[in-house]
Image (cartoon, rainbow, N blue to C red; front, side, top):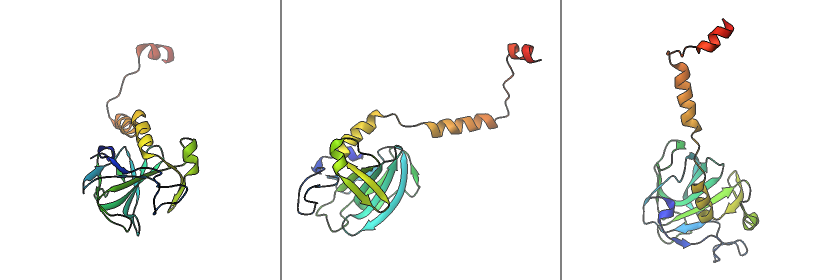
Length: 178
């Protein structure tokens, strides 16, 4: 399932006993009952870590340089570092101390704020430091940005260069330069 296929059960910036009084909830909680979640876009898994409160977490860096944090995972499926859009990432779960039912906590850390309200929400997890942003707004924006195809184009160019088929010079170029 895509991360957007389930309703938000605890929104971004929600207030509660577990959250910072001014900042609120740093991400969004989506209700998944042990479902398999796929990568939202092309990117790389930069860290898989077990944390006390957030349980098993997957840190996923998208092609724009933003870090997606998925917490409370039960199982991480993808062992490769680089993943394509739609590949299995993890199974949602109930790990960590700050959870009462199976769900997925999703937050995004950006190097620069996307809008004025995000500037208030700074975040640091391990070596990842930046600004929190609303995952709902961010994923809507991400869907309108075309994914890079430079990897495929580079491989195609490399194959073409290595090929033994030679393209002849055009006749007009031969006549000028002998």
